[in-house]
Image: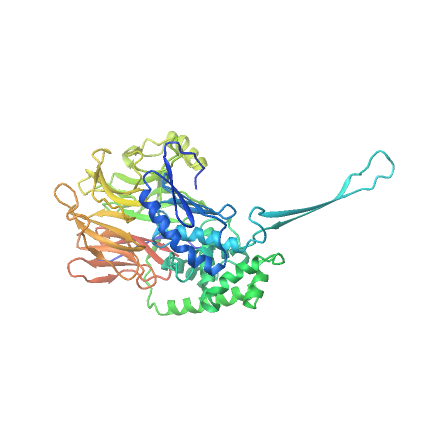
Length: 594
């Protein structure tokens, strides 16, 4: 089973329930082919969504040879800190949550979220419409036959007891999940809404080299544990991409049109008709092609440096953070569960003993207070009175923690069962309705900087540790996405990741005496490789930024000296390395995909 583990390198110096939301005022904007429904605060996003949707219309409808009968409805909403999209292809309706997916999911790369999700869901509408066997108002047929016993003794009984019942459903659309999701991610060669990134390559490389890839049958359905459902997306994108490159992009659309024939009851028949080979033959040649390519890639890596594994429980262990004294490690983990959410774990590195500090905790970063007593984390709490679920900042105090009947029974057990529960005495909520991600302490312990997610935009903000005196450090309104801010050891600089139009880089900015950004909006990117640069952290002396990057094709950990611009590669992995945390003695703990 593939997993995210925590590793240590030594010696380096250098979907929510539907709600009516009566609190929101809704508007609609119409274009030639779409009706965009949006609520207050999303005016700019709605205008952009209209442009994106219209740009995707011609390439997709021309490729698949299908157009909807009327305008497609797009419902754009941002009342939850939740990322997703849904296509109701029998109603020509799309539902979009505006929060970017890569804020809480590390197996996908950065993208222009609105462009990605709108084009993806519209691709579902068009491709699945092209594959529909009958009229849109009839999604399926259900054939049923009843046979009855012949009544021999009672002339007053016309029909005897039923003795034969035969039922057979005939679905109006028969498309396996790998093809549905793969084609939606691929789109066309000109939509450019999504891309085959190092994250997806990492997943398939690890699976294929271990001969643990999904079988062709497993690719066709969801309902899996751990990362299994995401594997369906990755395998689907990979196979559709292979078909487009090896046989031509038009063959992807032809598979859908072949599936629209009533006599085509499975994808195997469509493959034989369009590609001249069975689905199993197609799958086999694709796997062989990947295996050959990945073996060559790994052979060229040279000596590996993957560190010593220190946490390897469960399928997802994320965002490690060393305590100031280097004796403890805080991280997020699913532990032995095969599903989300993550809990906040504190591990004694000397003894290996662990404590569950909070459950659930959002998949955002955690940070230690300067005295090593407290931990900041972000969590999406239970729904408010309108049904919205949004992220806020919480603080765990080790001085108030410890084994107790209250902690272990009254709060932990309900939380495990329902995902919510009363707060333990050690956890204090600092904000309400702030939609706050990636909280971090200032070196003096007086301030907290975080990313606020609202109306498709991210901005840096700061509050005092008691939750008061809110200040905004940036005022982006163009869809800019921000991640993982960290104060320099002297408190004079901030490092954070920033994504614009799907390209994620790393910025370092100076703060003035009041803690505000100097030259806001005019800062330079400190790290901008051709790949994705993410998860910045400071070295103990503040001279270097340690970060993860995939510019080599595989995510590894690097260190950049800000003055000399000298770049040092810290890891050399087959899977991927993320989220470095640097100790005072130069130790680096990171999350590794294995």
